[in-house]
Image (cartoon, rainbow, N blue to C red; front, side):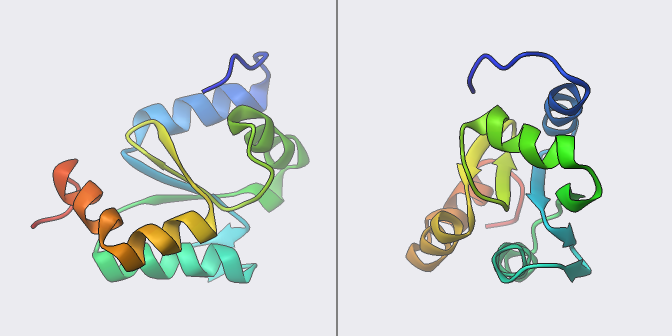
Length: 113
């Protein structure tokens, strides 16, 4: 994580990823993703049976820009696991297809083996 200036948005991001083991910063909400990339990540997490919190970045421009600055990553969605930034839609899909994502969630104790 980069040293980001403290703003209400970045403070919210830091607090959210500290309080929840799995967080997706996404367009829309898990029940109604507002973009295909967010939908892919939600479907993968649901398929694996991972409990997660979805944060809709479309509700707040500061949050939408803040998450990109926070991770120095230009796209949304962004997946965090136990405070660590994992990646966006393409990375998550590749990790899922290779089995790496399931292994990670199992090792972190977030899903049963």
